Image 1 (cartoon, chains in turn red, yellow):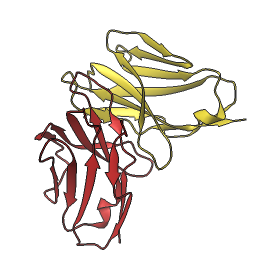
Image 2 (cartoon, chains in turn cyan, purple; image 1 turned 90 degrees about the vertical axis):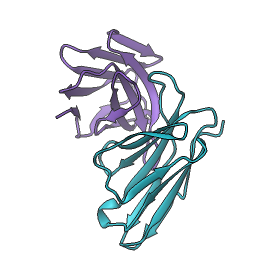
Image 3 (cartoon, rainbow over the protein chains, first blue to last red; image 1 turned 30 degrees about the vertical axis):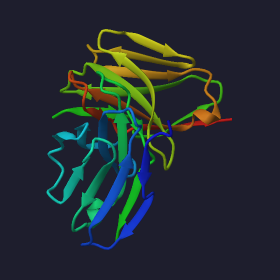
Length: 114
Length: 112
């Protein structure tokens, strides 16, 4: 068990560019989550997968954001036409498929949009 | 609207004392409450989970209480150490248990 892995650790991009982040969860975990965190705030829920199915998506998530988990293993989060307000830490977490299993977080991808 | 409130001001205490952090919530009926620790530049790490029908949970130097009448959880670290310095997040989940909503966190500084 190597934990949840996220790549890249840091991403600097210019406004208007597209970016994609990758998350590799703990191998036996069926559930995968994406959260966003800005400085001084708690993580904010973005979306949730059970295996390859995206079961919940935050109403705050704009159409520029899309997430996939094609084979129920790793996941990608894409942000199109980035804006400065997208600058944040993007956290991925995974858990077992049982009620209220704790979330295991990766160390995040820090996005800076200039 | 649903709100989870944690004290946004940092809590500074002396080594060896007990740290007590508060998590209050409104317009929410959580089935479970969890506490996480987060160090700078890292993802949160799970510490403890308490169910709505449990009053108290302990793990080593940690103790969590859950009062559904007051809509409050208290998180205690006894015999605190400088290594306990971090941000502590509380999180609530719905009955389906598939979505965790986090508070803003409280930063704890333990001085030697």
